Length: 110
Image (cartoon, rainbow, N blue to C red):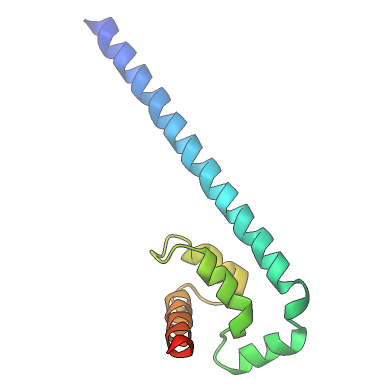
């Protein structure tokens, strides 16, 4: 009986470590994809001037710069931390940026 409990505990630990490793690898892969997309979009489209302009206007990045990143990420907020680092804005501003993007798309389509 004691051996069975030990085997179950070992299997549980291995399963938990496997799932944790899988989750961490998936998060790192997603982060790498977002960073690559950010580099592609910012390669020639954003100058230092526009960063200064964004800093003068409440710290929000230019519309074209953030729209691709915000569109690529899920809207559930699971990637807000990575977006805040890539867009150089505080984490609480990411949902505001997402709302602005959605409003502009609704306004542009109407």
